[in-house]
Image (cartoon, rainbow, N blue to C red; front, side):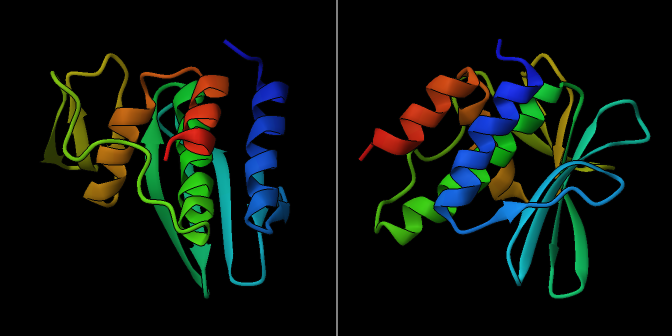
Length: 149
């Protein structure tokens, strides 16, 4: 598994593809943004990691993870989704959830069932997106997002 600095560099490559620049205002561990949107990775109060999206004055915690590697995957696919849309490409993953993974509504939002580490999402489509991303290490995920038609 890549270390955090390698992960940050790879995520930054994707952020640059969608014209976002590095920002890490407290309490963010990592962050990227443009004039309208900012994404950040923060330590959360439950001992895990939160991925937060700020847009037009509104801050929303889009996902919470037990594992830092999962938070890195989620940030990468958020930037990749924007880039793929700008390029006129569709989603890089199949519809639905992978075999053995489902989602249920819980107190923290949409939670994945059938995955080893805690992952919860403010919106259900993010859960489905991450359910496919979690099977890849970060470099492979980056390659899949870049090259899959």
